[in-house]
Figure 1: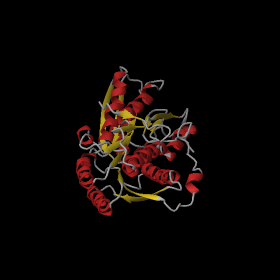
Figure 2: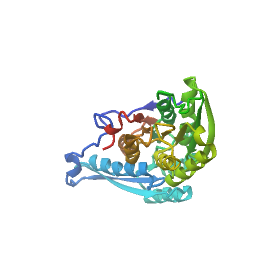
Figure 3: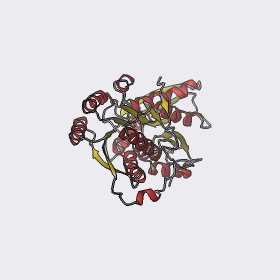
Figure 4: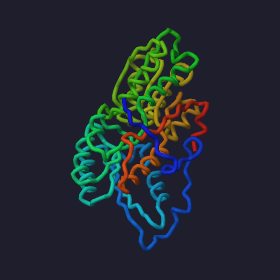
Length: 339
C-alpha cells in the first residue's frame, strides 16, 4: 500500500468549489510580461492525444498553466503526442532533455517503462511528474525528484463494481442467482486497467454476490474494438451475459452499440459500466444506454499536475503520490457533470 498519498494544498491548487466545474481564468492569465519575467520550460508527453480523456486533460493543463502566469513568471509548455508508442515517447523524453526543460510531465505509454524515463531525467537533473498511468512502487522509489499525480485505480474498479452491486437486482439481470459478466479490458501493460478489472469484480464478491466470468478480452481503449468484442461476447453467450464491464468509456460506448445491435436493453436485460465519465458517456447514461461510469476528473487531475510541476520548477519537493478521488456516476447524477 502506498503510504505517501496526499492532496495538494488549496493555496497551491485552487479547484472548483463544487464537483468538477471549470475553473475560470482570472486576471493573472491576462497580465502583460514584466521586465524581469522568469520563464520555465515544461515538456509534456501524453501517451495518445486522440484519447478522449487525455484530450480534455491536455486542454485544461494548458489553460491552468496560463492561469498560473503573472507579471513575474511565464510557463512555456510543449505538449507532444506519443501516439501509443513507447519508443516514440522515449524519443520525446530525449528531446526534452536536449532542450534542457525545467520539468517533465509524462503520461506513460507503458507503466513498466517508468524506470527508463526516470534514469534519463535523473542524469539530466530534470524532475518528472508522472500522470494518470501509475509506475510500480519500486520505480517510484528510484529518485526523490519524481512524483505521481493520478487517481487510485483500485478505487475506480471498486466503484464500477459498487454501481452494479447497488442495482435493485445487484446485476443479476436474468435472476438466476449468478452475475455472469464480460470484461473488455485495456492494455495489460498499464497496471491501471488491471486494477479496474480486478477490483470491479472484487467489489461484487466482497458483497457476497456470486459471479462468473464468461469473457475477458483486450480492447485497448478503442471504441470500435469495444463494439466488436461486446458483439462477440453476446453472440457466444447470449442472454447469459448479465453485465459488461469496460475499462474505459470509449470501449463502453462501442459496447452500447453492440448491445443495441443484439436486441438487448441496458437496464432491462443487461447492464453496462465504463470509466472516465467522458461527455458522450454521460449523455449515454442519461439516455439509458449505459448503466454508469466512474468520473476521473480531467480538470482536477490537470490542476494537481500543474501544481506539482510548478513546485519542482521552483526547486521544491512534492509528496511521492498526489491523488485525486473518483466519483460514481449513474443516471441519478450524470446531469451534474454533463457540462
